[in-house]
Amino acid sequence: MKPVLIDTDILSQFFRNHTRVLSHFREYLANHNTISLSIITYYEVLSGLKFRDARKQLAAFQEFVGCNTIVPLSEESICNSANIYALLRKSGQPLDDIDILIAGVAMANDLVPVTGNVSHFARIDGLTIQDWT
Figure 1 (cartoon, rainbow, N blue to C red):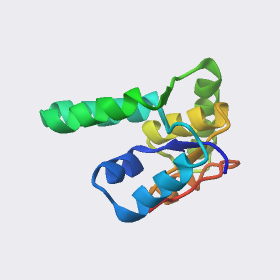
Figure 2: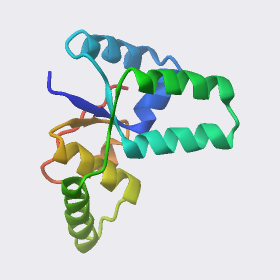
Figure 3: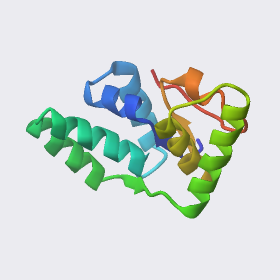
Figure 4: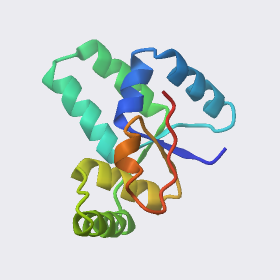
């Protein structure tokens, strides 16, 4: 099983105890030591929890993050993201910057994005995705 990069929607479902998502997490962790999420996903979840002042969920999220891996932006991931942005804009299929940045991080680190937003990420040529929902 190739290493994955967990997207925000999948992480949210994990914390909501979505049965199928939990099953995939268990299966994945039987073969890998940690879960990877991008710094972008970290920002999305953290900002949402802080906005809602969800202290209990924030503590659980910070504990989860401490045991796993946050993959940072890099020059390579930004270049990948810029290429994706340009190609999608030129083809008339723009995508949110957040999704483009997550895809760029995945490509730069040879990770497979795991997302429920299949219709968004499927527009990106050369990107293999998984949906754990």
